[in-house]
Every structure is written in C-alpha cells, then in structure tokens.
Amino acid sequence: MDKSVNYISEKKRKELESELKELKGPKRKEILDALQYAKSLGDLSENAEYHQAREDQGKLESRIAKIESVLVSSEVFSGGGGEVVEVGSKIIVQKNGEQEEKTFTIVGSEEADISLGKISNNSPLGRAFFGRKKGEKVVVSTPNGEISYKILNVA
Image 1 (cartoon, rainbow, N blue to C red):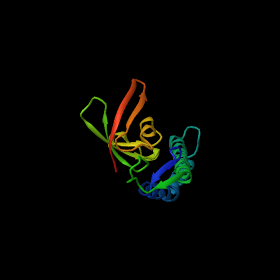
Image 2 (image 1 turned 90 degrees about the vertical axis):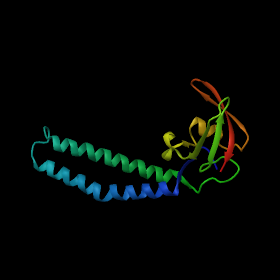
Image 3 (image 1 turned 90 degrees about the horizontal axis):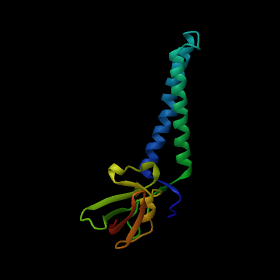
Image 4 (image 1 turned 60 degrees about the vertical axis):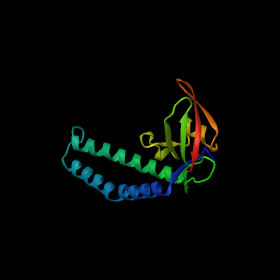
C-alpha cells in the first residue's frame, strides 16, 4: 500500500454513495422548492427565506462536490491483518516509559476519529507506524518533542 494515497473502507464508500444519492435527489429538490417559495414572496434583497435557501443550496452543492471528490480520488482498502502496519491494521502500542497500552486502527483520512482510536494513515502518528512490524520501536515528532512507541501487536 502507498501511504500517500487516500483510502476509504468499503463501508465508508457505501455510506458516502448513499449520502450522495440522498443529497442529489430529495435534498436538492427540497432546497429548490424552498428557493421557489422564497422567490414567490417578492423582493429578494430583504428576503431572509431566499438568502437562507441560497446559503443552504451552497452548502449542499459543496458537500456533493466533496463526496464526489472523495469517491473519485480514494481507493477502497480491504483491511489489514498482515504482519506489517498498513491501512486497515489494528495495532496495539505502548509509549516508552508507560505501562498503559493503546489500540489504534489505521484508516484513511475520511474516517479518522482519534476518540475512537482511528488514526489517519496521513497523520504524523499514522505515517510513523505505516510499514512497521510488531516489536519495532517508532519515534514520532510532536510539537512537545519526540515520543517513542513500541508496537506490541499488529492485526
């Protein structure tokens, strides 16, 4: 796997495709109906409903463009499971000098959520672990200095 590529899981791809279908269909129609209604109220320069509908339309079109871009530019990964850390790998690490173990799953940037232990393959931490194996020590540069981790397990 190439660590510079944007990856998404099959599940995330399906979620994005479903969201895109909803946004391009019913949601787009709903906003167009709101625009038509707002236009029927008259003077557009002081028409709050019209301005709100235009703002909603801009947000909708921006989200549609973002999803389409992600779907076109990303590769679907099937999950780790090997001995080498890659997108989809679940790793257990330990900070140097600490007893506590942390579990991370390496995911694409679209799915990253540190509160759930999902780190992007493009993040400093994800890049440091990428391509490493169980037992290796990894040094990560942070604004507060370097942090050393030991990879305890790769699944």
